[in-house]
Image (cartoon, rainbow, N blue to C red; front, top):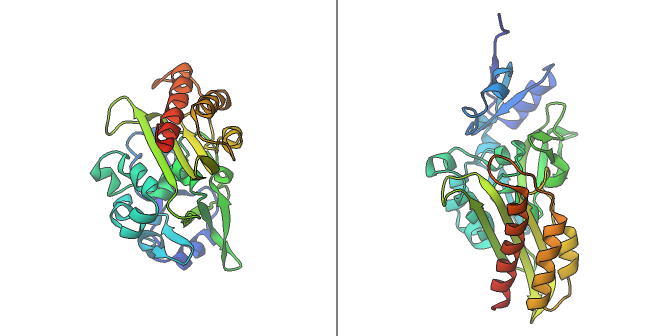
Length: 288
């Protein structure tokens, strides 16, 4: 006979941290639960569930600050999509959120869940990477959260650094500086909507005249861990945006990524498509 499943539904962060202080063994966190039906083996072994969707601060926080915005990890994506400040300051994030499943899924899904699920195909992850998202990790130590970058939390497919019953409490997004950068996000799937990504690409950039002053590039579904394409960014930095540098950047990105062949696509397709997406992004930015 299997051990009983114990479930906790704290109302406040203070209550959550107190529960975790007194628990032993592995905790499984739940929030939107959009993947629970498609991962039965993973969930069948969970014996201690902690519901983050009932934690008021994590479910309701969307706090506009002077230099950025603080988002509760359990806030539904629909709330992000509807917020006027986010639509103005972070249109690239809104575009990625709108491409996650259906409206019904967006009513349940959360940024915290998308990150903690740690899928290389997670739609918001390349976008959060180029936005320099800061993840606030609980339980709090001496009254404060640990603060980590996305690539410090996601280690590989389904694997994170959130051991010892840690959880994602908030996501902090600094406002792009300078404001109003060029942005590009595109997801390639088997069909137009409600598809798992074969590959995606997020680009955030600033230029003066034809010269690229700064650029951030991150591809999804092309490596075990979501990370920026640092070598491709370095190639483009302080370069005039013309057809020659666009071709070189495309070739560099194809060398830099390390995709695999799986049920959704081949590594060759992913390499070529990544290069083509970057060509499209840079050509659109240049006005060619």
